[in-house]
Image 1 (cartoon, each protein chain N blue to C red):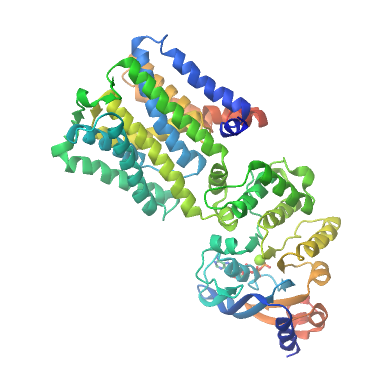
Image 2: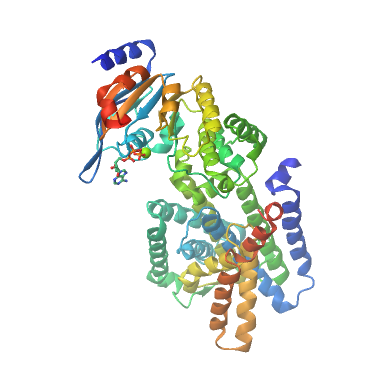
Length: 324
Length: 255
Ligand SMILES: Nc1ncnc2c1ncn2[C@@H]1O[C@H](COP(=O)(O)OP(=O)(O)OP(=O)(O)O)[C@@H](O)[C@H]1O
Ligand SMILES: [Mg+2]
């Protein structure tokens, strides 16, 4: 029992994170249809952001190519469902495996560089992935994308086009990623990752193989991004090139910056806030991107560490016990 | 020549833990370390002294693997480690404390030392328990006199205490060779006295290579002294001989 508590970052952190999952479970019975669907999407995308946070927030690896891993998951699952007639968990696992393999290869090469070069190399990898989607246009249908056949969108006999099923699955995936991120953050591994972020040279001179740790972090990160991509394609039934575009490399960065980099709960809050910010402003004005831009500027001015990062700092030691 | 004879006797007594041959490092046109042959027997406290810019930090950086040599080789415990990366050398037992304080400022002093102990105690994927790590870290902090400051953020410690934290991190690694690069910079006289006792205590388990400008510390601690000047070994021998050496006086002691 104390082992589980430690895994969840102590009693306060456990209460907060498990509490959130419980609230989200209940919420679906209350939410209006529109918000119900929106929330399923947010939960899946939050997994993407949680993964990004492991690389960026905890390890200090600013990747501009995470769309590659999200896309690998989505296309791995989508193409398996469409052309190999693999449904349900099989397609998801193929997507996950594709994302992990892609991260391993791209990461092993990109991590030979650091800083700005790392950003550029990851960006290039993602661009190559994006172009690959067009290259195999006969299968992927490029920009236009394809709709995953409903008969393939099943999980253990449950139809994934059912909104309630979708919500439960999205929530389950979210819970796994959130608890996984908590466990990483609170483990010895997490401590080393933060040490590498804070002072890489020092970590090396304590005997840590920095390259190996970074690659580990990147693979965990890419696996979560890929899981999100695979789930997104299967749950919502559409696979298209835009999900592999630069936009989907930048979005997780914005979500994480908004919610709080290096805070386990940050990515979820950021994804939620950004989604509704765009949703609300685009209903009012066509210049909604301007509003989003201004919101980001205000955020950087007043919450430089993101909403939860700044809050945690204000709360001091108490903050750290609630928000690892 | 007396220095060389003394070297031979020292070698005969204890096995050599660390040896360099023709170790050289050039920075552009500057040869910071110039073909150094050096041997350090196990169990010794060796002081490495020399004027500013003599190449002391560069030399020990070559030992720890922080920088690559331009030529020459490094042997540790009878094995050639020249090609080994820095982290792998740490795993073999070479620990380096930075001249320019390098700690994890946002973490507590305890966590800084836990990180050192964690690497040593991790086997494969299995890390030590949190309690074990804390106990190890607190013991190391107590040894350097920072026991009461374990919970403070490392960045909030005074400069002298950050230097001691560096030493505690070195202890957390339980190294076979501990390289200390000007550890007493910024310490008060009392703290220096305590530090001298600490290094004596450390030397019962580890070999110590100490770069130091404070002559009181050097003379009080070193079994032998190596003097580096312009990248080359100028003299080597026991403290008394070094104090009396004319070349050393001219180059360094300002005599
Ligand atoms: N990375 C580097 N690039 C270029 N020159 C360097 C570099 N590191 C050291 N040097 C030069 O090499 C020489 C030796 O420097 P080093 O830091 O090893 O001296 P030191 O004996 O440790 O001096 P101090 O007592 O001031 O610490 C100096 O002239 C220094 O300017
Ligand atoms: Mg120096």
